[in-house]
Amino acid sequence: MLNIVIFGAPGSGKGTQSQKLVDKYHLTHISTGDILRTEIENQTKLGEHAAKFMNKGELVPDEVVIDILHELFVHEPDKVGYIFDGFPRTLEQGKALDNMLHGENEKINVVLSLEVDESELTERLIMRGQISGRNDDTEDTIKSRLQVYNRQTAPLKEYYAKQNKLANINGMGTIGEIFTRIEKVVDRLDY
Ligand code: B4P
Image (cartoon, rainbow, N blue to C red; front, side, top):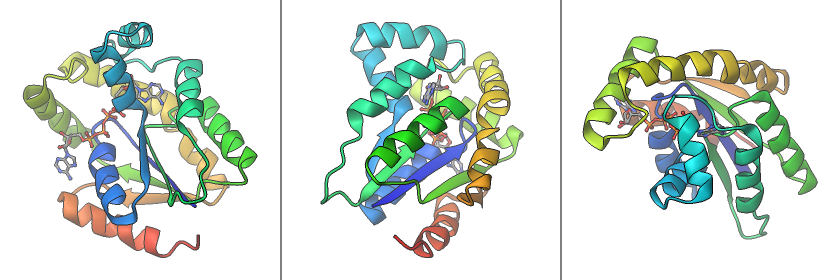
């Protein structure tokens, strides 16, 4: 299997590049952000709980997202692999993902870390908020999401660097230019 983690600050283009990876490599896409938003839309108990955190720009508690992941990951021989988008976001989640894959004799092949300047991130998210009306794309919430990223999520880079799995990708430029950089990394993988 080819298992990829796509990693980066809010607005770094994880969702955008994941879609291109799915199209080219036929991977199964797991976006915890999309799943949580669907739960909110459907007004489920889980959605109501998650919204309390997401609307403030905070992370949803680890146990909630780890449970979601366990439900979604299915090890099937005909699956090409997975793209984990927006998961893991904490060290705890990273360890849970490794344990789950290990139990299936699988592993993460590469972690693509999209590197984008903070001013560009803020601009992209404000623009997305105006278009999509996403509740968490407001100026105050964006600020706290960036702080949460730097404090809770960025330390995961060291975790994956120690495993020799981290690939830093310049996430500035056009969507196509960034995807070309990603393809170069993925096409070199042995899987
Ligand atoms: P996510 O849904 O993961 O969203 P994101 O980090 O804000 O955005 P992403 O990086 O996917 O950006 P996109 O491609 O859309 O998370 C939302 C929230 O859910 C979190 O804050 C958290 O509360 C909760 N959550 C999710 N997973 C969790 C977990 N594991 N644990 C706990 N909580 C969790 O790109 C952004 C915008 O930029 C788009 O409008 C796009 O069109 C534009 N764009 C993309 N690439 C561009 C480029 N190259 N140039 C110009 N614009 C570009």
